[in-house]
Length: 205
Image 1 (cartoon, rainbow, N blue to C red):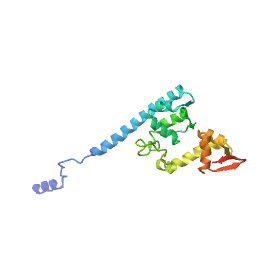
Image 2: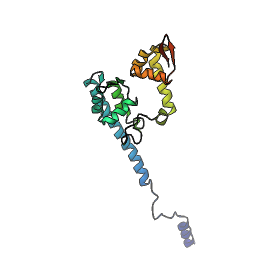
Image 3: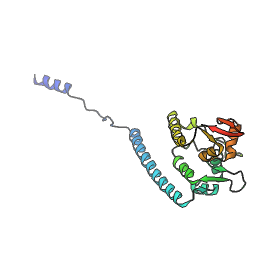
Image 4: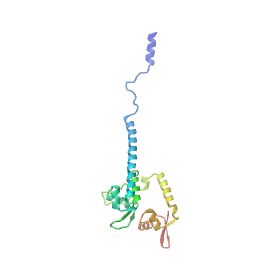
């Protein structure tokens, strides 16, 4: 009788595992650690960038040259030219061979803050550095989500509340940072809605 009970106890007792079940795989642990490390690195980089931006705003005047811009941003002359010609960084283009561009320091600082968050937006097209260059910039749809575009539209609508419904060339140039020649070119190419009033263009956004 006792032998039968002992046999039943052994049968009902849980069988110990030779290899305990793993709590988490190495990959899972590594992924979690990597995510935390990445966030910390990004936060530190953001703090360093913000500190540098404040120093730039304090040191430089309201407008700077192209040469000053590529020195501030630590980019090549060709990359700087692409950013200005494509309009990714707003500027006033005089068309001259020397001191051609006049760039707002605030716009350069904005580029410094955004280039890490939106690297694809500021990336030059494939083959740009191998050939004579290309002024084509990536479209907003390739970089921003629909939600981003809606937010941006609301932001610019808020900025335009102080302007009338119809703006002159001078007002558009002042608001966008482009020269009046560029604004007229937009009208000629029908890239913006405009009206010819008394032989002068007026724009509606």
